[in-house]
Image 1 (cartoon, one colour):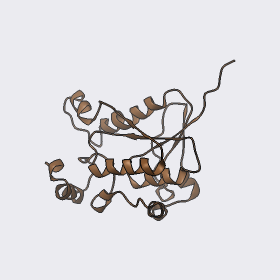
Image 2 (spheres, rainbow, N blue to C red):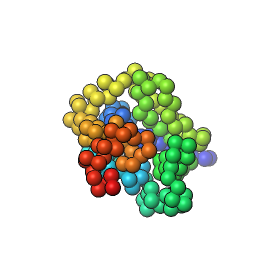
Image 3 (cartoon, helix red, strand yellow):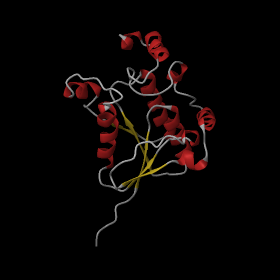
Image 4 (spheres, helix red, strand yellow):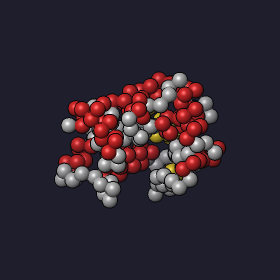
Length: 193
């Protein structure tokens, strides 16, 4: 007789408001939840500090992915060719592949932090048949105001970089707006250089 594999419940923490709020929202609803963070090696100090706060709040380890293979590793592997909107090797190599390796062949429910007011977003859909995505915020009709409320009521509040930036991710992400580059210059001149 073949033993059936236990379904794993996984929730990725990006360091941003939505994934943090989803982790808080799901904490008591799914006691077997596993949390992970795909560290690119190019995160803002505020992001890393917020992930540590989340780990304390959740009372569970947040598994860090990408040990030894950060952005610089893949930059060299790509001949020092920087990622672009057309060639996002950074997302593939630093987020998606490490996630699928972490999953392995176990059946997984992946909890995705897309809000109800982001109906236009689909999010990452794996080609692996053992990964099923669920969207609790969409399903329960929660929007951006609800997410801010969850974070405020938890006592954690918004990650500090939201004072000058609109999203988590590498500090030099090409998707940043000019005002965010200026925020990087003002808040982290060493990283801006």
